[in-house]
Length: 333
Image (tube, rainbow, N blue to C red; front, side, top):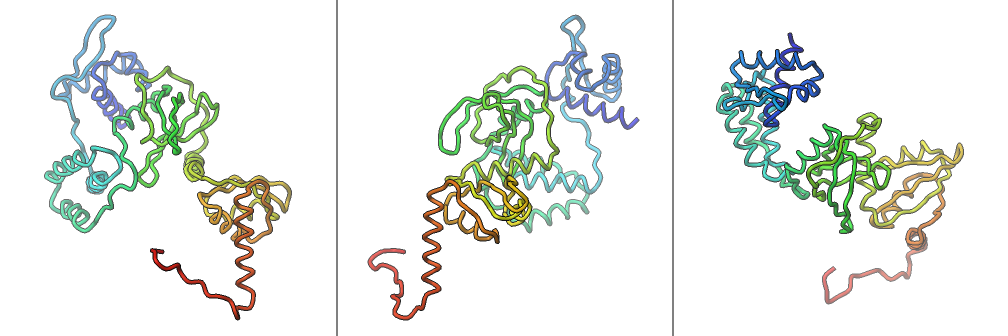
């Protein structure tokens, strides 16, 4: 019974998502037979939903007027969670959703029992939301990408990188990831023949989407989020270096602030490629490793380490007779 009810809600959702469906299309989405679809349509009609059927080879089903929204049966915690989610969405990173979320919240609050309305009002009247820190994302773009992920359809889009370079990409989309009010797409880049992470606010999808593809094996969700987090952190680094550390790989991993690929070279030696916008920050993190290391290829980092080393040497020398530094006059610091 519960399986049938869940399938009816799924069928109703599909009928609302698109105007016309054929019987075989609905059967494929629901993973049932066409006969089961016909029976489920009859059940929806008995519940009062005007599902129209069109006979013939090109026939199918559509939801008639008056079937826009099914009734919602929510327990107390579900109602409060939805209300809080709507209020949070009003201050989110998706363009145009603020007013829509507030309208929906107002409608929901009007039908909430007084005990639940007080809980929702307390949350709204005693919280403040900071404005979005990043660029807003077009909800239509998110919808196109999510549909392509769900339907396993190739996605073509114009893309602008962090440096401003423009390109046209063709990918197999797999996952949308939200991180600190920014949206990212993890996809298989068909031209680079590798996994890539794209900022959604820099994407301009080209419709219609491409042909269907056979999904590739995916790692577990926690590995996907770790990969995306690492890609986000590395994508804007201006300085990179290859560093050999005289310590086991596990020791280096445990001392780094973010996940980084560490290559074991032996039991007590490993290599990795850290990055940063400033070589001074790289030098700081290397100093926190608690182990000797060698810089293989990064002249900027070598110069920075030499400068810092000389500064520390001066700090250890006797301070008598040394001139105290003072800011220059005639200008701001």
